[in-house]
Length: 291
Image (cartoon, rainbow, N blue to C red; front, side, top):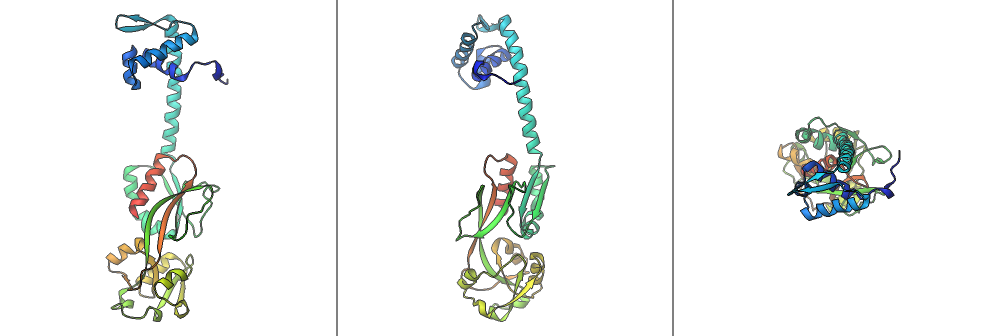
């Protein structure tokens, strides 16, 4: 049965009366609703005027319900209780629905998965499904909650229907294994350069580092993971961003080649426009902290 809202009193007055009934008076209702005693009394008097019936009567410093008031209070308590249960059930289902995230395989393997236990400590039992992809996915059509994307800082995010939430900046650098790079004085043009299937030469970035693309010998490696293995084994140089390279440099597995400053990348979380769940907001904050 549909509700004819035109003939119902205001919800604020109904709420004020139901709280007055459950709290035993205007003072208790005022505390529960965080408003003044006078505001509650005014709402209840307004409800009585709208209905044309007395709902409460003063008895000393307290109020008691009339028969009509007791009948209405019971109906409102049941109705508001059902509303509260429905809202709570929806919020609980949303909190435990889990998240579907798309980004690159490399970011999943090197940043997200190694640190996922941190997120689960805050949200035990929540399912996080990562879907690695080589290209940007239509996250609305495919039903994803969020995508983590990286673009050059010289470009503005332009993804229709999506909100782009800035996460971090990352400096690009030329890196190689110590056994290949040596003391760092060798000419990088004389060494092989590694590319994986998701990666294309970046002329504008490499030229800022003083590199001549025409003199570089490219070696294609199937995936980002294979590229990382080849890099650590000293099979070639590559461009890495500092966020990914940091732990490998600290471990002594790769070193940075001395070049002029190179381009900067921007990380974004992209989400469908509209309200976001607290769980998704917390996930985005967690990724930002990792980067």
